[in-house]
Amino acid sequence: MSIASLLFACLPQSVEPIDFAAVPRAIAKEPAYLAAPRYGCFLFGENGERRMWAVLDKSDAKGAAFDVLHLDRDFDGDLTEAGERFAGKVDGLSSSEEQPLSATFSIGDLAVGEVKHTDFRIVWYATRISYRMQWRGDKVTMGPYAPTTAQNASFAPDLKTAPLFVPGHDRPFQFEHWMSGTLERGKETYFKVFVGNRGSTKGTFSCVDDKFLAQEEFAVATLIYTTTAGKEERVRNELRERC
Image: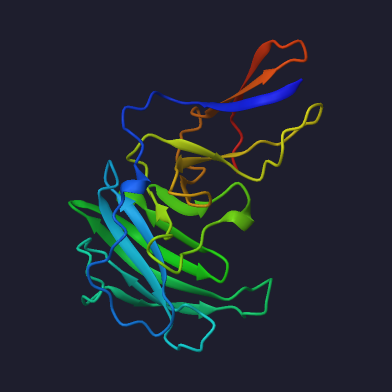
């Protein structure tokens, strides 16, 4: 038999997908940068209408680490305001695979309208970025992720190609598979998925952690395939294990 497609079963979604192509790619006011900046954007709100631009810079133009972060935490498009420049804690070595060079930015609380998220932090690595926060001060949202770690997103050198992330769990959940390899006929595959929200491109998936769903809740994956006789078949799998 051959694999035709793979479907994920979930509750009906009443909220339309965010139109990433329609998101304005502009920042009203930017600071003077010492190095070539790196851009990313976090979208909040039911339709991603609140845009929080994040721009990485260096404290030393010749340094290896992007250890300065400008974050539009009040969503007004002005990155030059007080309280929106963060210095990162630099760790690791640029030549080390076991301890890669990184810069951690501890942002703390983030107010989005009347809602407050807590323990927000962003980490820069040479090949990717990561973030994590307590959504509404409670459950964890984090990312970005991709089907393989090599595809995890980095910030981009310009606004046009900047990745857009959708943190949190106020929207209907989506799925992204992770480190599952290729499904092959006659072979077993340990199939794994993230639960959360897709971003603008591959590698920008934002997820919740394994403690978000109650123990009795789980994702369902339905494999749809066509037999050699041309008949469509379906196999339903309950994804109950967590990691």
